[in-house]
Amino acid sequence: MTAPLVVDQQHARQLLAQVDVPHILRNLFRDLARGQAVQPPQQLVEFPAGRGDFINYGGVLATERVYGVKTSPYIVRDQGPLVTAWTLLMSMDSGQPLMLCDAGELTTARTAATTAVAIDALAPGHARRLTVIGSGPIARAHLHYVRGLRDWQDIRLYSPSLGQQSAGQREHLAGLDSRLQLMENLEQALDDADVIMLCTSSAVPVIDPRTLSKPALITSISTNAVRAHEIPPACLAEMDVYCDYRVTTPASAGEMRIAAEQLGWQADAIVGDLPQLLSGDAAAPAYQRHAFFRSIGLGLEDIALANALYQLLREA
Image (cartoon, rainbow, N blue to C red; front, side, top):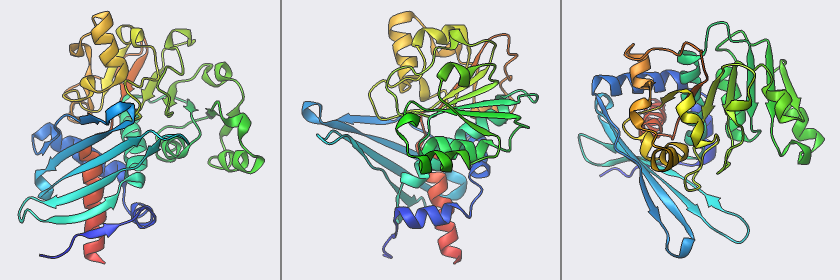
């Protein structure tokens, strides 16, 4: 048996720069629509005494003849929580491990690129004003993948931590795009926005869609905190809701779980997911009210990217 390749974070970053991440994810969601991929629910396992948890994300890519699992712990420590992640890629033919890859870079890239695929499918063609909430690596990756999707005339970024950042850090953020403005005020950042990307690790709402001046597309991501949600759960009933994969997302997304348990919201209210949108089986929003896209991060996304890196290494 050949030992599996081991790819650390720096090497993963170098390899990811050589692949078209949104293209890989579009193919993945089309495979899901065709029944050529399998995405089971996430598995959450809590550590004893409230010391954290870990989430396992599995999946099968039949067309690529691989399956795999990403495991991501959330470890509670006195100096702050620690989150890591590793993806194991396996062969469907030999049953042998092919690669063990640090999933930190994979997670950042697939989270942002999934949002980009959704925005490309859901945002109106005339969208011109883009708002980014957050300033960390995932927020910056979101901007990287979304910046060319529409003719953005106005890009604003707000983060509660901006005031604590150094002049160099703020200069780096401002240099990400010539259209980018750093905003000191959340309300100003949200004013008249067409697309709002929530890119935080917050466990509680960071905006209230009911305060926005016009219908907008709002995208939201997950963090490891239990039942994390970036909008109030009550807002789901007032929006056209979309997600990455409707089979698994409602059972994991914090606001969906809370809305279902406490407010009577039902997952059947989801208009469509990415497999349905990319296969033409779900309608885009009409923007008579807000549209909301929720992603939880699928094991298949990590596995598809890990496989792309594995193929690069095999060709080298």
